[in-house]
Length: 348
Image 1: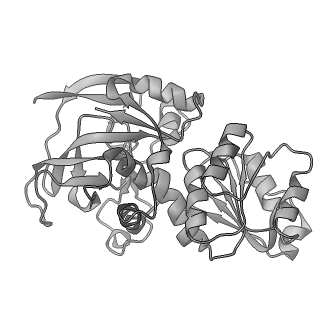
Image 2: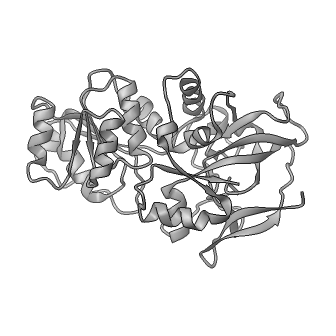
Image 3: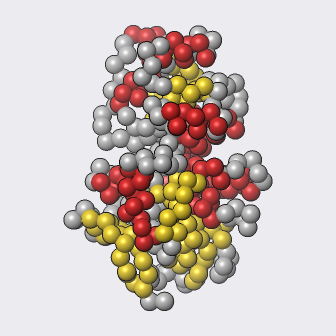
């Protein structure tokens, strides 16, 4: 076992290819993971198409993939946790530099690095992981479902539970019911939000949203869209609007749908400027806008537990399995919404 396949993105030439590379060796405080499943996310697509630029890249070439699960294959030296070979794990999507107080206190850190963007990720047969980024997973949680928890599920979970703090009976709107938005709907349902209004231009996505627990699924281009939101919320407007698309037009429409004290949560990532053109009513109604980024170690652990005890079945989120060697095809399918995927899974 000297070499392996890995999906590599070359930052200088902007080229992606599945290549044969040396199997990495874990250093102090690290372990080697045999990857069993890796999710394909829009962030991966944006890295490859050049719209997402790494801020803390440690090399000019990176193995893509920040959603992954597998088993511990080899232990590195100087480990502090009682880890054993063969343990089933999922990996946090990011890590801090490990040097600042923010890291020690588990607070957001300006030096947060993301797997598969700033350092080598999981589109590979093997990957090295720092021991503090490992989350054990139970035997009854399949690898493909565990792989998507660190981002596709953890990101909207933290948005709903932490950034928004949604309480039972509060009204929620979710714009963009793709890989993140579909889970945003499910998790809003899990915490008792009511009503839940899903908004997506694709009929298939609206149907999926209803199956995932939305009370209403609306077309944002409908002439009477605003009237439909008012009717669904008994005239009060939304308590929370989650932008899972990262599109300026979505943010405008979502902000306008908020009621008294309502809050727009920016879950989707976009390099484009944030603009809110609504005037006096935004001030008068005391509306808010909150940024959100990713999940947290606590959210991954909590979601693994919810899946383990049967409160959260992630099987419907897995659209298909694709061999690692065909990673470029998976990127194309997600980028062009072929088959309207929630999550495609690469299998080494």
